[in-house]
Amino acid sequence: MTTAFALSLDDLAALFPAYIFTSEDLRILRTGPSVVQQFPDLESGLKLTDIFGVDRPVGGFDPHRAAQARTRLILRHHKSGMLLRGMVISVNGAFLLCLGHAPNSVATAQVQGLSFEDFSVADSSLDTLMSVELQKSLIAEQRTLISDLSRSKLAAEAADRAKSEFLANMSHEIRTPLTAIVGFSSLLAEVPDLPKVALGYGRRIAEGSRSLLAVVNQILDWSKLEDGGLELEPENFNPIDLARNCLGLVSGQVGDKSVSLYLDSDASLPDALRADANRLRQVLMNLLNNAIKFTNTGEIRLSMTYEPVHQRLSICVSDTGCGIPAERLPKLFNRFTQADSSIRRKFGGTGLGLAIAKQIVEAMDGEITAQSVVGQGTKFDFSLVAPPALVDAQTQTESQSKLTLDTAETARVLVADDNIANRELFQVILRALGHQCDLVEDGRKAVDMALTHPYDLILMDIQMPEFDGLAATAAIREAAGPNQDKPILAISANASAGEMGQWRAAGMDDYIAKPVAIHDLAQKVAMWAVRSRDPHKAATQEAEFHLTLAERTAQGRKRPSV
Image (cartoon, rainbow, N blue to C red):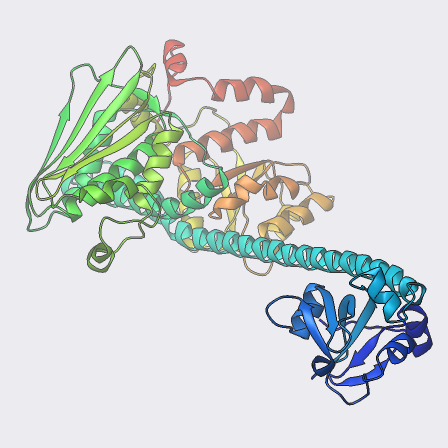
């Protein structure tokens, strides 16, 4: 460490009468007046260590280290034995030794003809200087630490932003085509008189697309889990149907293996439960996929039981595969961990599946465990809270899959989406619901249409090239057009957009995530159309939309299919 020491020779002489100024190799360059008087053999050009021995620091004298560490220095004159104490300061590649008198005894000082007054100023100044230098050192260290922490904080924030942007972009790029796949496969299942084989293919496409979406969500979910942001969405579902669908999806992966799939269910299992069915499907698909990966012969069994008293659904997935070594079981649910390092090379995978499964089960107030014997197989057991549902889950699922309308009024809707398949999908759904719609492919055209044509509501994709949905919404809200105060619903495949509330800040009224669920789209379009036309009925109409299916049935209300 180099110190800018801005003292003149007169200042040095006044403060430190015994100062010694040396070159980098410790050859004497200048000395203070007291040193010249007391040590006649101390001449310029000589090496300091030829005249003085170094008592402190012990173990060798490194002036660079002594200056950096602010080490206290004690020199002993070879001829007289007189001691000088002080410290070393690095000055532009040279060294300044600020010294004070430290005699062995008063008698020795008197014999040598020394007076303490000769060194009192130096001793006092030395103590002050060392105190100041110590404070400077501490302040410099604190500043360095604060600077390092600030840089680390900025780097962490930048990395977090980059991760969020990457996840958002990945979500958008994958969810956008999935919207068309999920939507059109659902529509295909509604086509009347469809051949049984074609209907089966359509259902397989729908289930497969949902599984692909689950994989995408798995990656996004881990990011949410790291931030503590996993949200559950309970719904009514039929547990047997859910299990059968999962087994049906993985059955194609068995291939030529001599593996049989079995489903066991307890008689106490209700026909309908309420929990997050999508999260449960995610856990089951992960466990079943792993079982098929590591089982070449034998069976894979999915068992389900129910505890009515505690309202807990218990599930077991067992296989007769290769098994997992006992020493690896404790780390099985850690992220990026697999039972063997060769597994990733042979089977692929991120090592996140079981870690996410554990987090999901725990979020659903449950627990998951694993047992395994090498060469015999593996068994995963987990349970979660799932109270009985008020209505039959299959009836609700079938009702939700149909295109329905709870109001006889026809709404006029503007749809802005840059994806042609998605625009076509929205058009088919809205027309089937009895609505009229206009389609545009970018934000500027959406603004042009909104300024010249009255609508009951606008469906606006958030991420569009050149002029996105947020900018288009802001422009519509600022212009004095016929749709300035009409509902605008954000539609986006960007998973973070809805959570961050960007749509609300831009002036949008609601948010629909892609892939779009037909039932959700129908419900929100009908609700916001009523709000648009008659705000006074909004509260009553919204309450009606949130009635359970059981209440609707009890009131004798019919839901016409379109």
